[in-house]
Image (cartoon, rainbow, N blue to C red; front, side, top):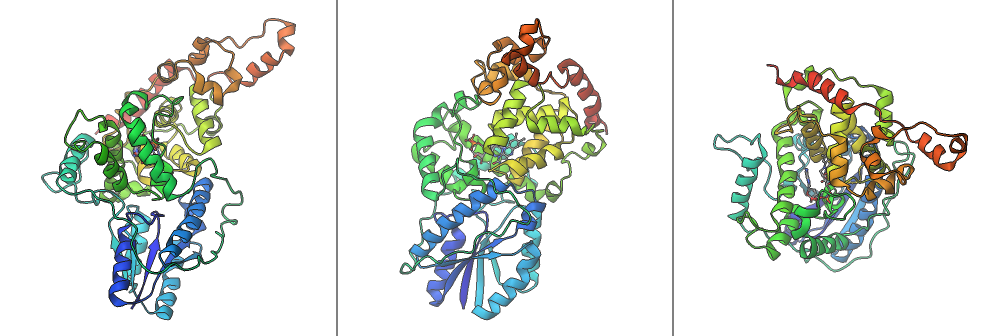
Length: 485
Ligand code: FAD
């Protein structure tokens, strides 16, 4: 029997259990092994996958092709439209090529899981392997066997289990003699993605990602706690684009930590503790997605979320999207997203709070906009982050905690260097005015001012879209819906 390894959000050859098992199977049966990747642009568009992420994926598929050829495996890129097209394609392929087994990673998202169930029920010999998390979804539970609903006990249980087992990434399987890398079909996404968005700002390849991980752990992890909230500083790992499409596995990250900080799982004072915690947040949200499929279907974790009377003002939403709210910190963040496809975590929290609380716009609007623009777009983390910010989520920030954009601005970008980079209109404002834009008088003093460049720029930059005190009070009233019941 021949076999296939189906690549999904796991575009690597290191630490790839499905690939390793497929190679073992083929060795055992002395049979043929090939690799496939399905391009499903209509499905991706329905899932709001960002064009920049698709570009990043395509660049990695090229790399994967070379790496697989070096171990004797031929990759085929198959252009389809939706998940539904996969079944007839696989049926025909399995029959034609005598496929006895297809190896693939199990995924956490609802539609992906439904797709796999349908395939298996239709007789496709699909073997799913857990490799999406360090600890498989469904294996970190409380005493009554349920998924935790609060992060801290989840992370304690997670560390306890993780510290009781070896965390050792797999190497590249030694398979067969190299072959010439086949020429791949280009991704055929134009109908749903008429505009390509380049991901060039991000280096492509497993080797780059692994090097970046190593350098981060060697040089920066101990300072992470101190710098991670300052968007002007490169204080975080910036590995999320690679983790999101599986160029890097979470196990490689945790094993990397343990190599340099062997007691990180058991020592609460370990310098690696804070970064490890973020990786555990990643796992928490994925485990939640599997335990609560409604999260994949855009429902609030807290059922009372359905009673919130969102204002959903479309003009205000557009101002937020375009970075034109008149709050420099919010606008700088949104422009970072629009221009680079990535946003600093502190700012994701600040803009999400602003959208859902100050503007009372449904968190799903923000979730969708993020997904459509993020290179690291990931349903579990994005949904988790949005619902956390809106106060509707599992172990969320309480609804009555409303981030003050002025305080966030002065605390996390004190010299405004991040803001000035993305909002040049305010570059020569005083720091006080940048952080507290409502104090800035937007009136024009003289005729000379009226025609000066500066006046034009200042006029071009909008007044704050809403006054903080007023918005805070309004949010508390409306979001009070979350405490009824
Ligand atoms: P680091 O700080 O170096 O963290 C290392 C890794 O841990 C990250 O790469 C990521 O995989 C994981 N991680 C870190 N923080 C979180 C978190 N809060 N939740 C889950 N995983 C985390 N992250 C995504 O990967 N994709 C998203 O679509 C996404 N959307 C978000 C939306 C909102 C509203 C918020 C508040 C957060 C979101 N995050 C998302 C989480 C976080 O902002 C990013 O993972 C982080 O900014 C990526 O930068 P980094 O790789 O330098 O992170």
